[in-house]
Length: 163
Image (tube, rainbow, N blue to C red; front, side, top):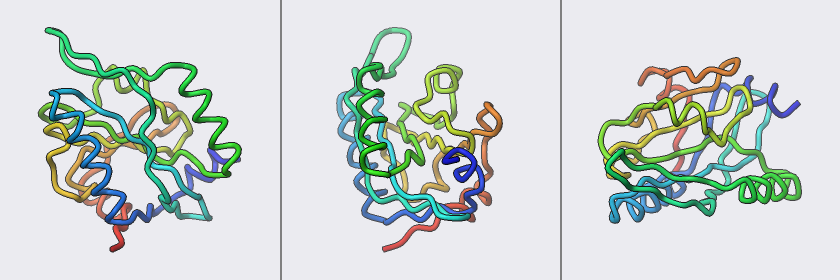
């Protein structure tokens, strides 16, 4: 049921404070030349999702000659799901940083935390040093098991930022 409702979301309302906290968190990881992951949790109403809080899961950042990334353990994901069930909140989006260009890599596709059809994955460039505007990031939506890139226009229409 929740997955079907998420698929029907046509706007995501998010406070400017949530966006700024997201960027600060990603920049904290980036100060160490590491990628970071943040999750947006909230409520889903007919046609609309409202982000109510940010959650930074326990994660193990990785940096090697092959690149940077992070791992989230199965135990952490279990605790996240239990917390969501207890609170009634839903996982709306995953947001992570890249060192340079923002795009959804093959690794991002394979190891996404968001698995519900209609869910969102946002990739912030430059270790989180980016405009406080989700439309300026790389925005993807899970569509029948595949991550579909949204255009800047689609992202601007979809994300409603409130002061």
